[in-house]
Every structure is written in C-alpha cells, then in structure tokens.
Length: 102
Image 1 (cartoon, rainbow, N blue to C red):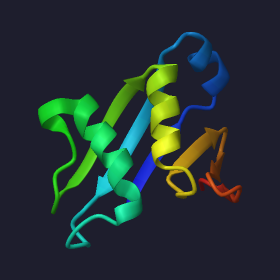
Image 2 (image 1 turned 90 degrees about the vertical axis):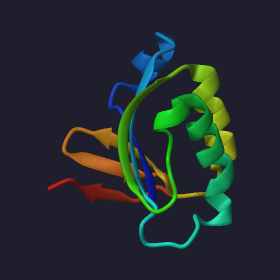
Image 3 (image 1 turned 180 degrees about the horizontal axis):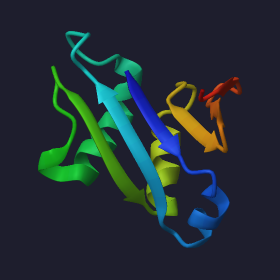
C-alpha cells in the first residue's frame, strides 16, 4: 500500500516550489508491488536514493518535492487512490472521498 499525504497549504507550498509530502509505503503484504504503482515507485526510489522503497519492507519518510517532481509523480500515479490531501481534521482521498481523521 502506498500513501502520499499532501499538506493543507498545498497551493502556498507549490508557489514556494517546496511541497512537503509524507510517504507511507508497506510492501510487506505483497510479493511484489502492483504494476500500476511501479512508475511512481521508480520515481520515489530515484529521488530518495539508497533510502528508497525496498520490497518486503514498510517505509515512512518525509520528502520535499518541487512542482516539477510533484507533476511527474501525479502523472506516474494517475488514477491510483494514493494521494491524500490533509485538510484540518478531515482528509480527501485522490478519488474524491472525504473522511474524518478522527
């Protein structure tokens, strides 16, 4: 499972060209990641270097992406419900679903 948490001040962060993203990745449950996630995982691995995602492990990290990197990541993961926009005590899943954070 891959989750990318976007900040509530996304537009301001994008204007600064410094978008903080919290990454949660759990590859322990599957023998290999779903094919749909591979392009995005390849980008993350490239940007994170040796600390990048490894098969069979859970991974958490904070990244700071440029607008260009965020654009690449969104294109690589288009249609996948992996982006979560944190808004106050609520969050929005990439597919448009609103839920309470508790």
